[in-house]
Image 1 (cartoon, helix red, strand yellow):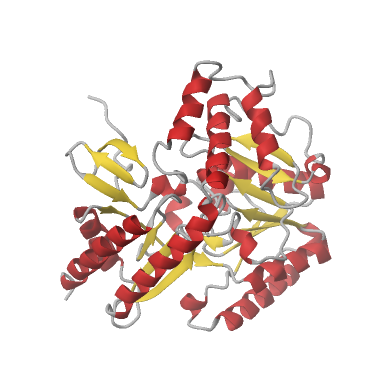
Image 2 (cartoon, one colour):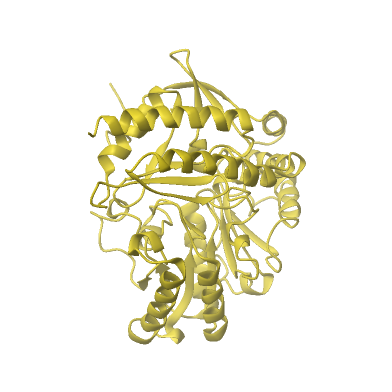
Amino acid sequence: MTSLSPHLRQATPVTVERGEGVHVYGTDGRRYLDFTAGIGVTSTGHCHPRVVAAAQEQVGKLIHGQYTTVMHQPLQRLVERLGDVLPAGLDSLFFANSGSEAVEAALRLARQATGRPNIVVFHGGFHGRTVAAASMTTSGTRFRTGFSPLMSGVAVAPFPAASRYGWDQETATRFALSELDYLLQTVTAPQDTAAFVVEPVLGEGGYIPADPAFLRGLRERADRYGIVLVIDEIQTGFGRTGRFWGHDHAEDVRPDVITIAKGLASGFPLSGIAASEELMSKAHPGSQGGTYGGNAVACAAAVATLDVIRDERLVENADAMGRRLRAGLEEVARATPGIADVRGLGLMLANEFVTADGSPDPATAARVQQAAAAEGLLLLLCGPWHNVVRMMPALVIDEAAVDEGLAAWQAAVAKGTAAAS
């Protein structure tokens, strides 16, 4: 008898039969409120009718047209539609399938464009599981252990995680930028540094937003030294943080490259990078391509996703519902000594559990997460110690579903923390 790898362990006990909006329905006949959204993927909810219709129509026309062999209309439409939402100046696109592929494409472009070997990433970042992407990932050792040697040329600088250091945000940001300057003097000289690669909100690293002043500091140093600023928008893009792009919270920061995936196509595998045509033209011939990148059905779904985000004002909804959800989480946290921090942006929120002495408390976080599933609320863990419970519902969530989730969360926290005492 064949089976899945034993390392593909489910975070919840649910086997899903179907999904609709912010809910999934298990084979047990029960309805569950899904605050995982496929790890931030189903941005328009499960099986949004317009996305389903677009995909169904495309399946009947062309499923796959390899995009360096023939061109197809869904890809052309997607490129045109992305032009309406991409940061200013980023007018050239390359498509792949996964986030890791997008990150590696950005890495390759930065190295080829600058002729420099080294990359600076920031502590706690997650950029993927393939060898180069894993070499750039420091959100947890599980993503990079056991298959060394990893890619060389990666230097790690501090991320301004104020809660981890126990400082105020201004102090943490000043420290992180100072240490970056020190790194550029001691580990990788500016003339050897191709790119800074940063998440505007640490994803697997614990849902910690980057202070706008930190992103501005990266932009200033990138400009000063001719370094490519790559902003990894794979989890934060397409409205997740209550702005279209996560870096939009730092309004005057302009990336040179962004990586995109997850919420782009409402569940169909599609990723990519965007850069200026001038920068993209510096990629070496033959360095960009792939069999399945820019798949016709995925592109049709992505166009429909962008239309739904615009027409249903889902970015604005993510901001409003995120505020409502956060207020409720903070109310629960005030009554729960073990919740040290509620943080995040928009519908990308997290609750950090600690012990009485302030140490990470993964055991309680896991109990609460499982208790939530029993209450009908699906959640995931993150953070280096797995002591952070994260929430990322679909952007279509409404007030009733937010309140439903908060009621289930309050009950789960009460049960999970009671078991610890």
